[in-house]
Length: 86
Ligand SMILES: [Zn+2]
Image (tube, rainbow, N blue to C red):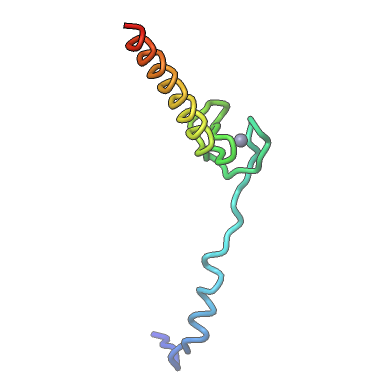
């Protein structure tokens, strides 16, 4: 049975594994905003996946929160003016 004459050095061994982690990733274009995205992934730019909205961005959450706050303030103002009339 053939047996290696010498132990493989650490350098030779590690050179073999050096390129293991390198791979070319597949990319496609977002259908909504044409931004380059990974395949089978939701677009992190606009939050769409296959033309359906699946993610809500931080900005959109902030806008919605602001709208709710304004609505609440308006409602409170109306209720306080009603109390003053009585
Ligand atoms: Zn997009």
